[in-house]
Length: 487
Image 1 (cartoon, one colour):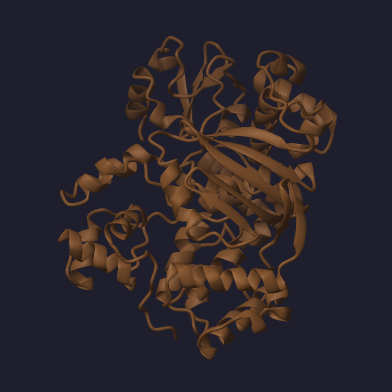
Image 2: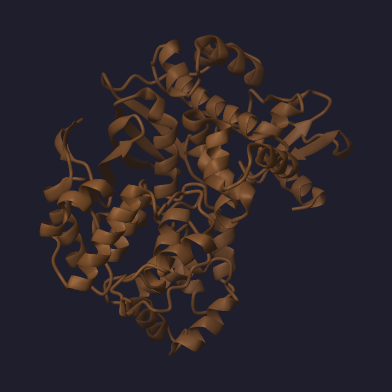
């Protein structure tokens, strides 16, 4: 968007752009979300920033009226596959807090100096400032939504000290943490749990993505219905459990963590799982340009692309799901979890963690059924992930990730493309090797064969992953029964 387009967005107070850019007003020294109800400033008094961190670095403070930090994130970090986009995905996952800027740079394959230079040039702030803004956003959420003590809020937000926490909150929001809490009524929840509201842009088809997850829920690891989703997962600080419930244009998150410092990572992964940072109006508008897809969008607005909370787990789900039905894949995954996953205490009783790659490599083979070639692929992949010869992360370059996966025996284009959709949130994947997708396309009259499907879908780029969701829904066959030949 250029200056004129952004200015029109703030003139109309368009909430679609909240979180996608920030408006800094030179006469007041504050920055706002585009939909801020305050009087629109004159163009000469306005600067626009891609990130809140850039506004902080330029000397602006967050608006106390519109709370620009309390917005969905930008969808650009999934759409962009450049260094900046990949870095932002990892910063949101807490990599800077855990590994520092050198660790972030190493994951991305660049030097710390080069990474800082690129992020500063493109986003207006370096990795430390971007991470600091992310910590401030988490702190604001905890101060206004929970009854945690100040020291616990500081720790859960990723700050290394209470002093650093106090200084950052005061600088960013121009109020002390105590004053910020007094402005809002904090929630309490049950002892040992954290409750937060995770905002999403409207329209938000929460029930649709909950239904998607419910038919794929792994026994013992996940519990899902059309109105609720809960699961265990292993975070850097230890096992965790969370539950989400839809609440208008947001999700209500309840979580129990081994370490409070894992909270930003958990929030980031839940947001990715439910695609909360998507731009649904922009996606729906693009898809409605095709007259056969437009009625599907009208019937199911705000459809979301399911992500994952664990990249390794998603790869095993994809491999096991090759060439079999969703129900059969769920059965096999449940057997694998029961055989190799650890049992833990959750908020509602005993649960089970999905096994790590090392656990699958050590004890998973007896639980696996099906063609020997597929079992060998699962085991060799587990061994490679466990010893580090294969890596899979939210910050991967899409092309490099795809090449690394298809180079492995037993992993083909369908599996690698599906992993890109679910792990990276890649919005423009079209799995032409998927039987159900092609069936949906034929039944709609969208396309009769793969070449026709590719030609017609090209006009809907870069949103073909969302097109795929509509085509799967249009098929009577359970989605993701894959007919591609495993190599």
